Image (cartoon, rainbow, N blue to C red; front, side):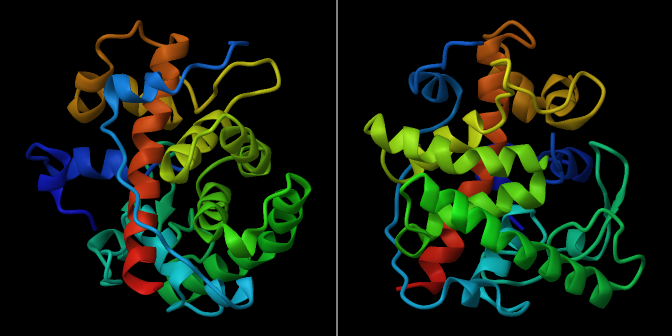
Length: 258
């Protein structure tokens, strides 16, 4: 689990769970400067990888599993399980989560079943997302960090979001974005619906409800300069959450892949 002090303020456990346990949620695309309005600049650390991409999710100790576990807040960067791994309630939909992926109750009360289901579900999406990345002229083997972020969105959000990520990532690279800035832009833009509107829940459920909650000051203080539910508010609400997740993934990869 992230050290709460890294968020820049003292948190109680309810606010922390609101921050880390969200599970899934015009027309002109916002400039990258939107991110910098409310999200700190991103520092990159380079990672490389050689080997079959499936090895990233071979078992519950594999680096891809640890990365998603950390993104969910269910593991420390070193792989140590946090209390949330064993049980927490998703504030977006009130489902009970267990296991490395926050399993939405699929494994019942058994942690081994939860983790087995998490691993099977994650692995089941690898072929589809590999094809989509390749169709966008992205080699997953040479873009491991982007690939794991793509799978993390499959775990977190509606399937449409992870399906949209590969092209958005290619678009980000074509815009001249690099590293984690490119991944962040793609992760946010992947939430955009076909009608051009960014969607990550609404005022009652999902990430937008958390960003709008006056008790969740981590979000509200960073979004107060925008009109609630405006394009910029939506973009930066999503960016705050997605940045936290991609930073956790990046730290796990930096620790485990040389």
